[in-house]
Image 1 (tube, one colour):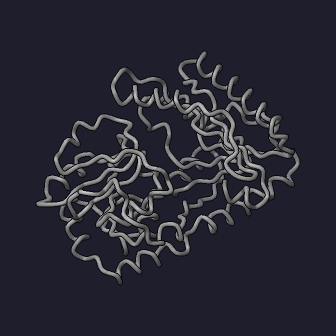
Image 2: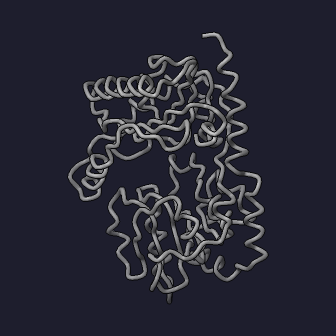
Image 3: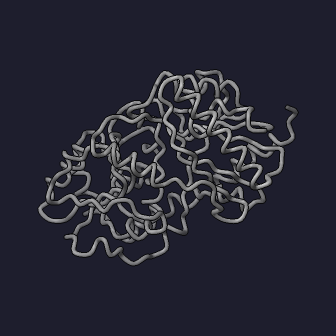
Length: 356
């Protein structure tokens, strides 16, 4: 979206549209609810032509909750459009299925479905409703983009004709040397790092197995916690918490090995992990679960197929050198977000010329 704005598009990005209902009174869930309430920020300008709306966090709980979410979300979007004096024609871009009822109701000339996750496999969601929303978008949007082949298959089964566009990476940002973050001071090396949301798609047993196999060193987890982490209670595992995106290159470059430890399920089979490319752009040895979208990187990534994460991490530590780091960076050099944007804009721009 930054690149759309830089290319002359006016962008109103609606973030954090709730997909889940409150899932109980556990600590992780209470933290999530508090964070949602604290983050009410309304409308803000991120940079020229790029505006971000954080709507009221209304959970789509039942028919009444869904109707309320749609009504309030539409009202906030239309108010923002008027406040910003955004011109028409407009294109609606749907990244989360629950926003499907807004298609054709916010002054949009055309619509895009950007399918990047099997959201119906997330915890504590109404799977039937999300699948209904996805079906509506797949059948009604003028353009469908999928970030992985598995996801494209989902859309084809719903009658869409999707284009597969993989995620990109800010190659320069992650390849530029950065000082080690102060949060890592005092942690015993080697540092085995994992960046991203700590949720139930992560293989907790794999992370603990790596920590348990280490005679020395530290497993560092960087990211919010969205699930119970009692199983990760180990003296060699440290939680840094969520850090700003601008700090991610420094963390990744400080790690001796980076992890993409996903469980095998329907959700992760459709995941195209951005962090994998970021690790490689940083030149770091990377160990990842063997999944459809990680398999193509087997030439520069240690893929785990047999569940033996400790052995894979040990190999990654031992086999690292400057030549391999250069190979990793070169592997993703042509997969920048600029390349991705050029392709996506080429798909979206013709929609402005279409008759309604």
